[in-house]
Image (cartoon, rainbow, N blue to C red; front, side, top):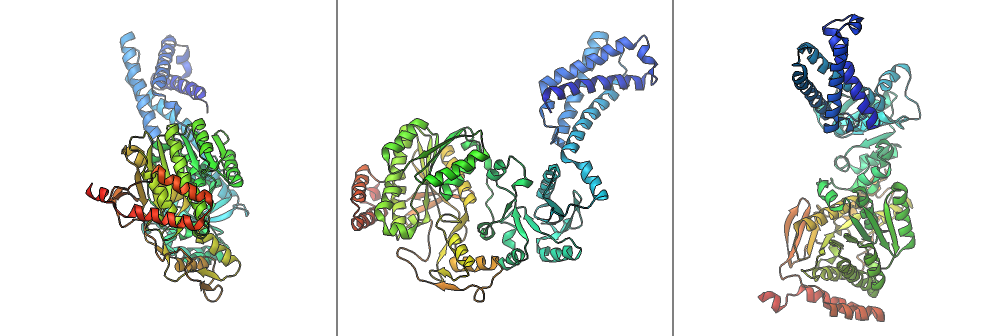
Length: 633
């Protein structure tokens, strides 16, 4: 409803409240309308309505949405109407010493004024939530058969919010039949007419009871995965999927934004990655909002798994303009089209550009003048980079140097590079190139206006080249699922969680104001054995290892290690935020000089792979070995 219409309703309700209060107290018959006092009563009523209008212009109470009126809005309404009554009494006392205003009329006027405005809001919210329709409909009709019966699992407060949103949907696709809460004491309660049947431990029992009552559940909505999902075994989840039950989750911020704010329409099926994930980290999103909102943000490698998620999240946090760089035409087109469709009013620039091309990178930066830069472009596949070390150095090392130089010259306020745990005590070319890329960032001038930082984390579930898509494909083909070694283990987190932590660390770097470049590591939890990951993925499909799918061990490939670490032996860590630690090199963290970068660039352009392997190995060893100068310092 437009503000002008709500303002008019405010005036009309105030005027009517005074007139009805006077008639109720002084003369309940219609005769007073033609009495000698009628003119003065009307003048006082107009005065009351005028004061109500003037105070509304001051407090703007009607700016609040009537469709989503809350208790807080009720208190604001109580305050504003009470002030109207006091102001009217003061003005009436000054003008006519309030002799023509009985105190009982004034009190009843306030009650009617407050009640009238509250009623208007409640009617609007009732219409918006279709509460009357929902209350009457079950008495007249049965739920449509095409609506999926839905079981909600999670906090009943979140369930209440979801049910409220669902009530606003004119043609909901789901029909909630029960809730499984977190507190056993909630059992037996009704949340918007939906019964709480127990807790997550009662899942299978409740599903069976609903089936016996001819209310077979077709979908289960987990309100806070993976916190709740983590309490269920892979076998249990696999049996649900085998029974044809769809496992759903609430949307992330970026997905809700893409769905134009409709929560029921934005429900997503849980992916294997989310079913395998650890409980999510709780972050203060205010920091990230302050970092991104209203800023020009540039993302390299924008079409990749990490880069594209960074793009989605910075858009969700309200960036002013998004500049996306990638050397893959299709990947750039795909993420560009996705964001353009979801956010038609967003200012987006898609730049087909290779970070190896120093001149082109600088041209883009000078033209776009980004404020925040996320450098996610990299070659990350261990085996391929092992075979093509020159390509790895050109992209991961020289490309990082090009982006850092461009960020500095264009006046960006912050640049963050995405690194990997394979850069710690690297045993392969890919990890070595990322270690050198970190050194490029460490070597940036402390006097630059651009704050440089590195965020280092482990494997990301579902990212391009990770084991999860490989295992999924092998399971779909009937096996075998191949694992290199029964003892190999890795750190894992989901893509959205990794990106949110990257944004969190970046906000910390900018807010901290430290001049020297910072290196952050993310708390990845406990490492996961890859063979256990394979077994869980097989169980999630309702299959059994050995009977339905075979696991075959193939041996470690060149450059692979049994375990990875997030901290080098030369490094100490200091906790900065929840799940974010800062790495401090005990020997000063020497960076890559321009001369050494030129040597690597020359070798890479000569395509001499053996010479490049030797040069990379020498550079990594130099960085890990403290010089006499640094020791004495």
